[in-house]
Length: 427
Image (cartoon, rainbow, N blue to C red):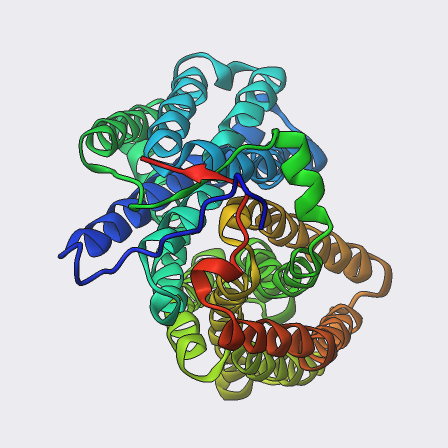
């Protein structure tokens, strides 16, 4: 540790009273609201396709642009959160998201170019994930971080809010209505965040430049290991939440409404299991939770490759994978909280979050290509089983060794010295 470094001071939740719980609640609500905004275009894509005579590729592009921008945008936003804290970044991102939401609601729906431009800036809402993980992580001691970050991660259910309300609001009051409602909620949250949100006492503020911190983050082993695991766990969740209705409709002949309801059940179970994965990681180690989760995904994907009857075997396979992908996503960020240096949690989170978001777009494209070429989804699901198996081997070998070394070093060195932050203590 250099002479100018200050130790990371871990807040004591008992000394701070109920403030950690309040901060966790505010962060989770902010994450959910920003994800609600981030996902506004997807439910309305069929309406836009019909109104603007879009091709299937153009429709897919409208949906994909905000997701890709939101995923990549997590990298700089996570690093900025390390520097400025969640108290600044949560209201800033929320207010910045209001602009494209209002643009899309009032003017951007009249052309493909308008939808793409609005969708590009709508991606800002998807970066909120990279704010919340370092913010929440700093408020809780190591023994409770897995559960805390897992609870925060359940805010990804904001996409379900969008799926359940957007079309209904548009049908009731016009296409601009869901955008106006979401913008109002974003503004209200930003005001609440300014008034109530506070960074943890003793938060470490890095002094290096953004480029220097990102370069240093890319040299960390945990960055690449967690990115690979999250690309499978959260990427698998995203892929199924996007592609499952089409799969069920094509493979089993379900009606669109029935397929969408089953997809909602898949999403809900995954969201609920995310904090469970974090909670288990606090007790039996993140790598073990990941190993169990990935093993379930391997088995579920292998079974589903044979397209069994939907009741009961197919349903069991999909729900098992939903639970496993949710728990595995929670365990991945429990691993980040365990292994990432205190002053780089945001930077690591940004890169890992980007990997997860982008990982969700490869499987749907691949599944569509395989079905178009061979008339079956079997090969795509078999590939998912193999990828999950590769992630399982990574987790039980290299990642487990990294975790053992980190835990061993912290048993020998006090935690306040082991973090080796660079910078000064925040106020």
